Length: 327
Image (cartoon, rainbow, N blue to C red):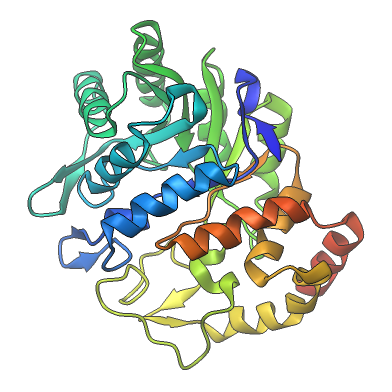
């Protein structure tokens, strides 16, 4: 199952893997912004297994684990033909790699160039297929300078295309004016249909790359009202404003109720909940490319199998919309 990476017409798997979790723990001050402890060898096996299962798209960021996610991904892919996978990473968060601490944000042209070179080294590659701006609320007037710097990196051969990780359609439209902007990364899942952003991506021929496709894990069905996540997990503390589904390490009852209401529809035709949630995203638009996270080989295998089922039927999509709109 394949889709196109926006107007680039670069074919990629209809689903990618989000590599935030495999960076391991890292921090913003005293707040955890990783997903807890990880096993690098398991991560490498999972990435390599994904390739064998037809997943060719891998999304990370330089800040995940203070560079560790990029390093693990580079190690996993270094012996594979470069044209057999598509690499996406992000920039603008500054960080102390040794202390695993976010230290600030920088979108100056000089910093973008340094960050790109550092990512290329960690990823063990000569070019990045999709380079994404990792500051969703950046000043709109100054965003043009960022876009122009990215165009220069295209000319230099260091990146092929670029995009913006933002949930704001107005900001996305600014980047879309650049000839090599081909994707916008934004939140999309059963509980958040992102109507304006999906419409923008469709109208401008941009790939809609979907973070949070499993609602930070809620749509996996693994969590109940009694669940409590550890403090080194981004969900296991006082949640940041964008964390809608968990608070203080517990899933919010409101969302558990919504999940119960649509559970049976998502599991049609023998799908697991995870596979149903991914099928919903494909049913939403031909432009969507979900990037579920993972820590284990087993999670990757379950994710990949969703491509065998394909999208939900439109009748199922409409029934989910009817149920949720009434809650």
